[in-house]
Image (cartoon, rainbow, N blue to C red; front, side):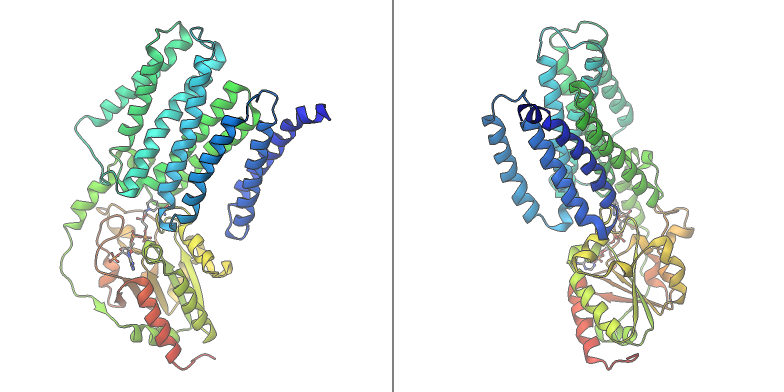
Length: 467
Ligand code: NAP
Protein backbone atom coordinates (compact mmCIF):
# COMPACT_ATOMS: atom_id res chain seq x y z
CA UNK A 1 0.00 0.00 0.00
CA UNK A 2 2.82 2.36 0.95
CA UNK A 3 4.50 1.60 -2.37
CA UNK A 4 1.28 2.34 -4.23
CA UNK A 5 0.83 5.67 -2.45
CA UNK A 6 4.43 6.59 -3.16
CA UNK A 7 4.02 5.95 -6.88
CA UNK A 8 0.37 7.16 -7.04
CA UNK A 9 1.44 10.61 -8.16
CA UNK A 10 3.07 9.15 -11.25
CA UNK A 11 -0.22 7.49 -12.34
CA UNK A 12 -2.10 10.67 -11.44
CA UNK A 13 0.31 12.72 -13.60
CA UNK A 14 -0.04 10.31 -16.50
CA UNK A 15 -3.84 10.45 -16.35
CA UNK A 16 -3.71 14.25 -15.97
CA UNK A 17 -1.56 14.48 -19.11
CA UNK A 18 -4.09 12.37 -21.06
CA UNK A 19 -6.92 14.49 -19.66
CA UNK A 20 -5.19 17.67 -20.91
CA UNK A 21 -4.85 16.23 -24.42
CA UNK A 22 -8.52 15.14 -24.54
CA UNK A 23 -9.65 18.42 -23.03
CA UNK A 24 -8.00 20.44 -25.81
CA UNK A 25 -9.34 18.02 -28.42
CA UNK A 26 -12.93 18.20 -27.15
CA UNK A 27 -12.85 21.97 -26.63
CA UNK A 28 -12.52 22.16 -30.43
CA UNK A 29 -16.25 21.76 -31.08
CA UNK A 30 -19.29 23.26 -29.33
CA UNK A 31 -21.00 19.85 -29.07
CA UNK A 32 -18.06 18.37 -27.10
CA UNK A 33 -16.84 21.55 -25.37
CA UNK A 34 -18.60 20.88 -22.04
CA UNK A 35 -17.02 17.41 -21.94
CA UNK A 36 -13.68 19.09 -22.68
CA UNK A 37 -14.09 21.44 -19.70
CA UNK A 38 -15.05 18.58 -17.35
CA UNK A 39 -12.15 16.32 -18.38
CA UNK A 40 -9.80 19.31 -18.07
CA UNK A 41 -11.05 19.93 -14.52
CA UNK A 42 -10.60 16.24 -13.65
CA UNK A 43 -7.06 16.39 -15.07
CA UNK A 44 -6.19 19.42 -12.96
CA UNK A 45 -7.68 17.83 -9.83
CA UNK A 46 -5.58 14.68 -10.47
CA UNK A 47 -2.45 16.76 -11.00
CA UNK A 48 -3.02 18.67 -7.73
CA UNK A 49 -3.86 15.51 -5.71
CA UNK A 50 -0.87 13.67 -7.21
CA UNK A 51 1.43 16.56 -6.30
CA UNK A 52 0.07 16.77 -2.75
CA UNK A 53 0.74 13.05 -2.22
CA UNK A 54 4.34 13.32 -3.37
CA UNK A 55 6.81 12.42 -0.66
CA UNK A 56 8.60 15.79 -1.08
CA UNK A 57 5.60 17.61 0.41
CA UNK A 58 6.18 17.78 4.16
CA UNK A 59 3.85 20.58 5.24
CA UNK A 60 0.28 20.99 3.99
CA UNK A 61 -0.71 24.12 5.93
CA UNK A 62 0.74 26.68 3.51
CA UNK A 63 -0.63 24.75 0.54
CA UNK A 64 -4.14 24.63 2.04
CA UNK A 65 -4.10 28.35 2.78
CA UNK A 66 -3.03 29.02 -0.84
CA UNK A 67 -5.80 26.75 -2.19
CA UNK A 68 -8.45 28.49 -0.05
CA UNK A 69 -7.28 31.98 -1.09
CA UNK A 70 -7.11 30.94 -4.75
CA UNK A 71 -10.61 29.42 -4.63
CA UNK A 72 -12.00 32.50 -2.85
CA UNK A 73 -10.75 34.69 -5.71
CA UNK A 74 -11.31 32.30 -8.63
CA UNK A 75 -14.83 31.00 -7.88
CA UNK A 76 -16.59 34.41 -7.62
CA UNK A 77 -14.59 35.67 -10.60
CA UNK A 78 -15.85 32.79 -12.75
CA UNK A 79 -19.46 33.16 -11.60
CA UNK A 80 -19.81 36.95 -11.70
CA UNK A 81 -17.79 37.72 -14.81
CA UNK A 82 -19.96 38.75 -17.80
CA UNK A 83 -19.31 36.87 -21.06
CA UNK A 84 -18.02 40.07 -22.74
CA UNK A 85 -15.23 40.25 -20.13
CA UNK A 86 -13.81 36.78 -20.82
CA UNK A 87 -10.75 38.13 -22.72
CA UNK A 88 -9.57 40.35 -19.85
CA UNK A 89 -10.14 37.69 -17.22
CA UNK A 90 -8.24 35.19 -19.36
CA UNK A 91 -5.40 37.73 -19.36
CA UNK A 92 -5.59 37.95 -15.58
CA UNK A 93 -5.39 34.19 -15.13
CA UNK A 94 -2.40 34.01 -17.50
CA UNK A 95 -0.74 36.74 -15.45
CA UNK A 96 -1.01 34.70 -12.27
CA UNK A 97 -0.05 31.40 -13.94
CA UNK A 98 3.05 33.02 -15.40
CA UNK A 99 3.90 34.71 -12.08
CA UNK A 100 3.67 31.32 -10.33
CA UNK A 101 6.09 29.77 -12.85
CA UNK A 102 8.51 32.70 -12.55
CA UNK A 103 8.44 32.60 -8.73
CA UNK A 104 9.10 28.84 -8.70
CA UNK A 105 12.05 29.50 -11.04
CA UNK A 106 13.33 32.23 -8.70
CA UNK A 107 13.06 29.90 -5.69
CA UNK A 108 15.00 27.22 -7.61
CA UNK A 109 17.67 29.76 -8.56
CA UNK A 110 18.23 30.74 -4.92
CA UNK A 111 17.92 27.16 -3.57
CA UNK A 112 21.70 26.57 -3.27
CA UNK A 113 22.66 30.25 -3.38
CA UNK A 114 25.39 31.57 -3.80
CA UNK A 115 26.08 28.47 -5.93
CA UNK A 116 24.01 28.87 -9.12
CA UNK A 117 22.22 25.86 -10.67
CA UNK A 118 24.50 24.53 -13.31
CA UNK A 119 24.24 23.74 -17.01
CA UNK A 120 20.95 22.51 -18.43
CA UNK A 121 18.91 23.45 -15.35
CA UNK A 122 20.13 27.05 -15.50
CA UNK A 123 19.14 27.30 -19.19
CA UNK A 124 15.63 26.01 -18.39
CA UNK A 125 15.34 28.37 -15.39
CA UNK A 126 16.39 31.37 -17.46
CA UNK A 127 13.73 30.66 -20.10
CA UNK A 128 11.12 30.01 -17.40
CA UNK A 129 11.84 33.23 -15.51
CA UNK A 130 12.21 35.42 -18.62
CA UNK A 131 8.89 34.29 -20.13
CA UNK A 132 7.16 34.08 -16.75
CA UNK A 133 7.89 37.62 -15.57
CA UNK A 134 7.38 39.29 -18.95
CA UNK A 135 4.09 37.43 -19.42
CA UNK A 136 3.03 38.54 -15.93
CA UNK A 137 3.32 42.29 -16.59
CA UNK A 138 2.27 42.00 -20.26
CA UNK A 139 -0.91 40.13 -19.22
CA UNK A 140 -1.66 42.70 -16.51
CA UNK A 141 -1.30 45.43 -19.13
CA UNK A 142 -3.59 43.50 -21.51
CA UNK A 143 -6.13 43.18 -18.68
CA UNK A 144 -5.83 46.93 -17.97
CA UNK A 145 -6.36 47.87 -21.63
CA UNK A 146 -9.45 45.69 -22.00
CA UNK A 147 -10.89 46.75 -18.65
CA UNK A 148 -10.35 50.45 -19.44
CA UNK A 149 -7.78 50.91 -16.64
CA UNK A 150 -4.97 51.65 -19.14
CA UNK A 151 -5.61 53.81 -22.27
CA UNK A 152 -6.69 51.45 -25.05
CA UNK A 153 -5.13 53.21 -28.11
CA UNK A 154 -1.54 52.26 -28.96
CA UNK A 155 1.04 54.38 -27.12
CA UNK A 156 3.91 54.97 -29.51
CA UNK A 157 7.02 57.14 -29.75
CA UNK A 158 9.91 57.53 -32.16
CA UNK A 159 12.46 54.73 -32.01
CA UNK A 160 10.14 52.55 -29.89
CA UNK A 161 10.98 49.27 -31.61
CA UNK A 162 14.69 49.99 -31.15
CA UNK A 163 14.23 50.76 -27.43
CA UNK A 164 12.13 47.61 -26.95
CA UNK A 165 14.69 45.43 -28.73
CA UNK A 166 17.52 46.96 -26.67
CA UNK A 167 15.69 46.17 -23.40
CA UNK A 168 15.00 42.62 -24.60
CA UNK A 169 18.64 42.18 -25.62
CA UNK A 170 19.76 43.42 -22.16
CA UNK A 171 17.40 40.85 -20.58
CA UNK A 172 18.86 38.07 -22.70
CA UNK A 173 22.46 39.11 -21.80
CA UNK A 174 21.63 39.23 -18.06
CA UNK A 175 19.87 35.88 -18.35
CA UNK A 176 22.62 34.14 -20.29
CA UNK A 177 25.45 35.48 -18.10
CA UNK A 178 24.88 33.10 -15.14
CA UNK A 179 24.69 30.17 -17.59
CA UNK A 180 28.12 30.95 -19.00
CA UNK A 181 29.99 32.14 -15.93
CA UNK A 182 29.60 33.16 -12.27
CA UNK A 183 27.30 36.19 -12.04
CA UNK A 184 27.42 39.08 -9.54
CA UNK A 185 24.72 39.07 -6.82
CA UNK A 186 22.82 42.03 -8.34
CA UNK A 187 22.48 40.40 -11.74
CA UNK A 188 19.51 38.13 -11.05
CA UNK A 189 17.29 40.89 -9.54
CA UNK A 190 18.28 43.15 -12.46
CA UNK A 191 17.30 40.36 -14.88
CA UNK A 192 13.89 40.07 -13.19
CA UNK A 193 13.31 43.84 -13.35
CA UNK A 194 14.19 43.93 -17.06
CA UNK A 195 11.75 41.07 -17.79
CA UNK A 196 8.98 42.89 -15.88
CA UNK A 197 9.74 46.15 -17.69
CA UNK A 198 9.81 44.49 -21.10
CA UNK A 199 6.33 43.02 -20.50
CA UNK A 200 4.93 46.56 -20.08
CA UNK A 201 6.87 47.98 -23.05
CA UNK A 202 5.78 45.09 -25.28
CA UNK A 203 2.07 45.90 -24.78
CA UNK A 204 2.23 49.75 -24.91
CA UNK A 205 2.23 50.06 -28.74
CA UNK A 206 -0.59 47.52 -29.23
CA UNK A 207 -4.20 48.75 -29.40
CA UNK A 208 -6.85 47.37 -27.00
CA UNK A 209 -8.76 45.72 -29.85
CA UNK A 210 -5.79 43.52 -30.67
CA UNK A 211 -5.52 42.30 -27.09
CA UNK A 212 -7.40 39.00 -27.71
CA UNK A 213 -4.74 37.98 -30.25
CA UNK A 214 -1.97 39.12 -27.92
CA UNK A 215 -3.59 37.23 -25.03
CA UNK A 216 -3.48 34.02 -27.10
CA UNK A 217 0.23 34.70 -27.66
CA UNK A 218 0.77 35.38 -23.94
CA UNK A 219 -1.02 32.10 -23.22
CA UNK A 220 1.60 30.48 -25.40
CA UNK A 221 4.42 32.26 -23.47
CA UNK A 222 2.95 31.15 -20.12
CA UNK A 223 2.79 27.56 -21.46
CA UNK A 224 6.41 27.73 -22.65
CA UNK A 225 7.42 29.06 -19.23
CA UNK A 226 5.64 26.15 -17.50
CA UNK A 227 7.26 23.72 -19.96
CA UNK A 228 10.70 25.14 -19.14
CA UNK A 229 9.82 24.79 -15.44
CA UNK A 230 9.05 21.11 -16.14
CA UNK A 231 12.57 20.67 -17.58
CA UNK A 232 14.14 22.55 -14.67
CA UNK A 233 12.30 20.44 -12.09
CA UNK A 234 12.22 17.22 -14.13
CA UNK A 235 8.44 17.14 -13.98
CA UNK A 236 6.99 15.37 -17.02
CA UNK A 237 3.42 16.60 -16.46
CA UNK A 238 4.55 20.20 -16.58
CA UNK A 239 6.54 19.53 -19.74
CA UNK A 240 3.52 17.95 -21.49
CA UNK A 241 0.86 20.39 -20.27
CA UNK A 242 3.14 23.41 -20.80
CA UNK A 243 4.08 22.32 -24.34
CA UNK A 244 0.41 21.74 -25.24
CA UNK A 245 -0.49 25.13 -23.82
CA UNK A 246 2.36 26.83 -25.65
CA UNK A 247 1.52 25.18 -28.99
CA UNK A 248 -2.26 25.70 -28.78
CA UNK A 249 -1.90 29.37 -27.75
CA UNK A 250 0.50 29.99 -30.62
CA UNK A 251 -1.70 28.20 -33.18
CA UNK A 252 -4.72 30.16 -31.96
CA UNK A 253 -2.94 33.50 -32.37
CA UNK A 254 -1.84 32.49 -35.89
CA UNK A 255 -5.43 31.49 -36.78
CA UNK A 256 -6.70 34.85 -35.48
CA UNK A 257 -4.10 36.78 -37.50
CA UNK A 258 -4.98 34.79 -40.63
CA UNK A 259 -8.71 35.40 -40.16
CA UNK A 260 -8.00 39.16 -39.98
CA UNK A 261 -5.53 38.86 -42.88
CA UNK A 262 -2.90 40.55 -40.73
CA UNK A 263 0.62 39.46 -40.02
CA UNK A 264 1.97 38.87 -36.53
CA UNK A 265 4.28 41.84 -37.07
CA UNK A 266 1.30 44.04 -37.95
CA UNK A 267 -0.55 43.03 -34.77
CA UNK A 268 2.51 43.42 -32.52
CA UNK A 269 4.17 46.45 -34.09
CA UNK A 270 1.51 47.94 -36.42
CA UNK A 271 -0.20 50.22 -33.80
CA UNK A 272 -3.55 49.24 -35.37
CA UNK A 273 -5.74 51.64 -33.32
CA UNK A 274 -4.00 54.65 -34.86
CA UNK A 275 -4.93 53.71 -38.42
CA UNK A 276 -8.55 53.74 -37.30
CA UNK A 277 -8.69 57.43 -36.39
CA UNK A 278 -7.47 58.49 -39.82
CA UNK A 279 -9.96 56.16 -41.51
CA UNK A 280 -12.93 57.55 -39.54
CA UNK A 281 -12.14 61.01 -40.85
CA UNK A 282 -13.06 59.89 -44.39
CA UNK A 283 -16.73 59.32 -43.55
CA UNK A 284 -19.03 61.45 -45.70
CA UNK A 285 -22.76 62.09 -45.25
CA UNK A 286 -24.63 59.77 -47.63
CA UNK A 287 -28.24 58.65 -47.50
CA UNK A 288 -29.09 55.29 -45.92
CA UNK A 289 -32.43 53.45 -45.83
CA UNK A 290 -33.77 52.75 -42.38
CA UNK A 291 -36.78 50.61 -41.45
CA UNK A 292 -39.01 49.74 -38.52
CA UNK A 293 -39.42 46.46 -36.64
CA UNK A 294 -42.73 45.99 -38.46
CA UNK A 295 -41.04 46.31 -41.89
CA UNK A 296 -38.33 43.88 -40.80
CA UNK A 297 -40.83 41.31 -39.50
CA UNK A 298 -42.83 41.51 -42.73
CA UNK A 299 -39.74 40.87 -44.84
CA UNK A 300 -38.58 38.00 -42.61
CA UNK A 301 -41.84 36.06 -42.52
CA UNK A 302 -42.16 36.41 -46.28
CA UNK A 303 -38.73 34.90 -46.82
CA UNK A 304 -37.85 31.32 -47.60
CA UNK A 305 -34.28 31.49 -46.45
CA UNK A 306 -32.72 33.82 -43.86
CA UNK A 307 -29.06 33.85 -42.87
CA UNK A 308 -28.31 35.51 -39.53
CA UNK A 309 -24.86 37.05 -39.05
CA UNK A 310 -24.10 37.76 -35.39
CA UNK A 311 -21.29 40.09 -34.29
CA UNK A 312 -19.85 41.92 -31.33
CA UNK A 313 -23.00 44.05 -30.88
CA UNK A 314 -25.07 40.91 -30.21
CA UNK A 315 -22.65 40.07 -27.39
CA UNK A 316 -22.76 43.62 -25.96
CA UNK A 317 -26.56 43.66 -26.04
CA UNK A 318 -26.75 40.05 -24.74
CA UNK A 319 -29.33 39.53 -27.48
CA UNK A 320 -28.68 35.82 -28.08
CA UNK A 321 -31.90 34.67 -26.36
CA UNK A 322 -33.96 37.07 -28.47
CA UNK A 323 -32.15 35.68 -31.55
CA UNK A 324 -33.28 32.23 -30.47
CA UNK A 325 -36.90 33.42 -30.05
CA UNK A 326 -36.86 34.99 -33.51
CA UNK A 327 -35.34 31.83 -35.01
CA UNK A 328 -38.03 29.66 -33.39
CA UNK A 329 -40.83 31.89 -34.65
CA UNK A 330 -39.47 31.99 -38.18
CA UNK A 331 -38.81 28.23 -38.31
CA UNK A 332 -42.38 27.65 -37.11
CA UNK A 333 -43.52 29.67 -40.11
CA UNK A 334 -41.51 27.51 -42.49
CA UNK A 335 -38.56 29.85 -42.96
CA UNK A 336 -35.16 28.19 -43.35
CA UNK A 337 -32.92 30.00 -40.80
CA UNK A 338 -29.16 29.47 -40.78
CA UNK A 339 -26.28 31.25 -39.01
CA UNK A 340 -23.02 32.43 -40.58
CA UNK A 341 -20.14 32.61 -38.11
CA UNK A 342 -17.07 34.65 -39.01
CA UNK A 343 -13.91 33.36 -37.27
CA UNK A 344 -13.14 36.77 -35.72
CA UNK A 345 -16.69 37.99 -35.09
CA UNK A 346 -16.89 39.43 -31.59
CA UNK A 347 -13.79 39.89 -29.50
CA UNK A 348 -12.51 36.39 -28.82
CA UNK A 349 -12.31 33.13 -30.73
CA UNK A 350 -15.57 31.21 -30.58
CA UNK A 351 -17.36 34.24 -29.06
CA UNK A 352 -20.48 33.82 -31.21
CA UNK A 353 -20.57 30.01 -30.88
CA UNK A 354 -20.52 30.28 -27.09
CA UNK A 355 -23.34 32.83 -26.97
CA UNK A 356 -25.54 31.00 -29.46
CA UNK A 357 -24.91 27.69 -27.66
CA UNK A 358 -25.90 29.40 -24.38
CA UNK A 359 -29.23 30.27 -26.04
CA UNK A 360 -29.65 26.64 -27.19
CA UNK A 361 -29.51 27.41 -30.89
CA UNK A 362 -28.86 24.01 -32.52
CA UNK A 363 -25.24 23.54 -33.68
CA UNK A 364 -26.34 22.26 -37.06
CA UNK A 365 -27.68 25.73 -37.89
CA UNK A 366 -24.22 27.29 -37.26
CA UNK A 367 -21.92 27.42 -40.29
CA UNK A 368 -18.38 28.59 -40.68
CA UNK A 369 -17.63 31.34 -43.20
CA UNK A 370 -16.17 29.17 -45.95
CA UNK A 371 -19.09 26.70 -45.72
CA UNK A 372 -21.90 29.25 -46.01
CA UNK A 373 -20.47 32.13 -48.02
CA UNK A 374 -21.78 30.92 -51.37
CA UNK A 375 -25.31 30.53 -49.91
CA UNK A 376 -25.83 34.29 -49.47
CA UNK A 377 -26.59 34.73 -53.17
CA UNK A 378 -29.58 32.41 -52.83
CA UNK A 379 -30.97 33.75 -49.54
CA UNK A 380 -33.82 36.25 -49.25
CA UNK A 381 -32.51 38.10 -46.22
CA UNK A 382 -29.11 38.40 -44.59
CA UNK A 383 -29.87 39.67 -41.06
CA UNK A 384 -26.75 41.24 -39.56
CA UNK A 385 -26.99 41.61 -35.78
CA UNK A 386 -24.31 43.89 -34.30
CA UNK A 387 -21.65 42.81 -36.80
CA UNK A 388 -19.75 45.40 -38.80
CA UNK A 389 -16.16 44.77 -39.93
CA UNK A 390 -16.81 41.11 -40.75
CA UNK A 391 -19.40 42.12 -43.37
CA UNK A 392 -17.66 45.19 -44.81
CA UNK A 393 -17.28 44.71 -48.62
CA UNK A 394 -14.35 47.19 -48.59
CA UNK A 395 -12.21 44.27 -47.39
CA UNK A 396 -12.60 42.77 -50.87
CA UNK A 397 -11.59 45.72 -53.06
CA UNK A 398 -10.44 48.85 -51.15
CA UNK A 399 -6.66 48.54 -51.03
CA UNK A 400 -6.43 51.58 -48.72
CA UNK A 401 -8.72 50.02 -46.11
CA UNK A 402 -7.07 48.72 -42.92
CA UNK A 403 -9.13 45.53 -43.31
CA UNK A 404 -8.26 45.02 -47.01
CA UNK A 405 -7.78 41.31 -47.67
CA UNK A 406 -9.63 40.14 -44.54
CA UNK A 407 -12.02 37.36 -45.65
CA UNK A 408 -15.58 38.58 -45.02
CA UNK A 409 -19.09 37.18 -45.03
CA UNK A 410 -20.63 38.06 -48.42
CA UNK A 411 -23.91 39.43 -47.04
CA UNK A 412 -24.07 42.03 -49.84
CA UNK A 413 -24.80 39.17 -52.24
CA UNK A 414 -28.12 38.39 -50.51
CA UNK A 415 -31.36 39.65 -52.09
CA UNK A 416 -32.00 41.88 -49.06
CA UNK A 417 -29.77 42.90 -46.18
CA UNK A 418 -30.93 44.14 -42.79
CA UNK A 419 -28.49 45.46 -40.19
CA UNK A 420 -29.34 45.94 -36.53
CA UNK A 421 -27.04 48.45 -34.79
CA UNK A 422 -27.51 51.59 -32.78
CA UNK A 423 -25.94 54.18 -35.05
CA UNK A 424 -23.66 54.66 -38.05
CA UNK A 425 -20.65 54.35 -35.76
CA UNK A 426 -17.82 52.11 -36.93
CA UNK A 427 -16.78 48.82 -35.36
CA UNK A 428 -13.41 47.60 -34.11
CA UNK A 429 -11.42 48.65 -37.21
CA UNK A 430 -12.84 52.19 -36.94
CA UNK A 431 -13.86 52.43 -40.58
CA UNK A 432 -17.00 53.24 -42.47
CA UNK A 433 -18.99 50.31 -43.80
CA UNK A 434 -20.08 50.80 -47.42
CA UNK A 435 -22.63 48.00 -47.00
CA UNK A 436 -24.94 50.44 -45.17
CA UNK A 437 -25.21 52.63 -48.31
CA UNK A 438 -26.12 49.70 -50.57
CA UNK A 439 -29.69 50.34 -51.90
CA UNK A 440 -30.77 46.84 -50.84
CA UNK A 441 -29.60 47.38 -47.25
CA UNK A 442 -32.09 48.37 -44.55
CA UNK A 443 -30.71 49.83 -41.33
CA UNK A 444 -32.61 48.85 -38.19
CA UNK A 445 -31.33 51.40 -35.69
CA UNK A 446 -31.50 50.38 -32.05
CA UNK A 447 -30.06 48.17 -29.34
CA UNK A 448 -29.95 44.60 -30.68
CA UNK A 449 -31.92 43.08 -27.79
CA UNK A 450 -34.72 45.67 -27.76
CA UNK A 451 -35.00 45.76 -31.54
CA UNK A 452 -35.17 41.98 -31.77
CA UNK A 453 -37.89 41.97 -29.08
CA UNK A 454 -39.89 44.34 -31.25
CA UNK A 455 -39.35 42.18 -34.33
CA UNK A 456 -40.40 39.02 -32.45
CA UNK A 457 -43.61 40.79 -31.34
CA UNK A 458 -44.32 41.86 -34.90
CA UNK A 459 -43.55 38.37 -36.29
CA UNK A 460 -45.98 36.89 -33.78
CA UNK A 461 -48.61 39.30 -35.05
CA UNK A 462 -48.07 38.19 -38.68
CA UNK A 463 -50.01 35.30 -40.20
CA UNK A 464 -47.87 32.24 -41.02
CA UNK A 465 -46.89 32.26 -44.69
CA UNK A 466 -45.15 28.94 -45.38
CA UNK A 467 -47.07 26.85 -42.81
P1 NAP B 1 -17.34 45.16 -34.93
O1 NAP B 1 -16.81 45.41 -36.29
O2 NAP B 1 -16.53 45.58 -33.78
O3 NAP B 1 -18.77 45.91 -34.89
C1 NAP B 1 -19.62 45.72 -33.81
C2 NAP B 1 -20.83 46.63 -34.05
O4 NAP B 1 -21.75 46.32 -33.02
C3 NAP B 1 -20.52 48.10 -33.93
O5 NAP B 1 -20.45 48.72 -35.19
C4 NAP B 1 -21.64 48.66 -33.05
O6 NAP B 1 -22.33 49.68 -33.75
C5 NAP B 1 -22.56 47.47 -32.83
N1 NAP B 1 -23.08 47.42 -31.47
C6 NAP B 1 -22.45 47.64 -30.31
N2 NAP B 1 -23.29 47.54 -29.28
C7 NAP B 1 -24.50 47.23 -29.81
C8 NAP B 1 -25.78 47.00 -29.26
N3 NAP B 1 -26.02 47.08 -27.93
N4 NAP B 1 -26.81 46.71 -30.10
C9 NAP B 1 -26.59 46.65 -31.44
N5 NAP B 1 -25.40 46.87 -32.02
C10 NAP B 1 -24.37 47.16 -31.20
O7 NAP B 1 -17.73 43.65 -34.70
P2 NAP B 1 -17.61 42.37 -35.64
O8 NAP B 1 -18.25 42.61 -36.97
O9 NAP B 1 -18.07 41.23 -34.80
O10 NAP B 1 -16.05 42.25 -35.95
C11 NAP B 1 -15.11 41.90 -34.95
C12 NAP B 1 -13.90 42.79 -35.06
O11 NAP B 1 -13.06 42.55 -33.92
C13 NAP B 1 -13.09 42.51 -36.31
O12 NAP B 1 -12.54 43.70 -36.81
C14 NAP B 1 -11.99 41.60 -35.77
O13 NAP B 1 -10.81 41.65 -36.56
C15 NAP B 1 -11.77 42.18 -34.39
N6 NAP B 1 -11.13 41.22 -33.46
C16 NAP B 1 -11.75 40.05 -33.21
C17 NAP B 1 -11.14 39.11 -32.39
C18 NAP B 1 -11.78 37.77 -32.12
O14 NAP B 1 -11.08 36.88 -31.63
N7 NAP B 1 -13.05 37.60 -32.40
C19 NAP B 1 -9.92 39.41 -31.81
C20 NAP B 1 -9.32 40.64 -32.08
C21 NAP B 1 -9.96 41.54 -32.91
P3 NAP B 1 -23.16 50.79 -32.94
O15 NAP B 1 -22.22 51.41 -31.99
O16 NAP B 1 -23.64 51.71 -34.00
O17 NAP B 1 -24.28 50.09 -32.25
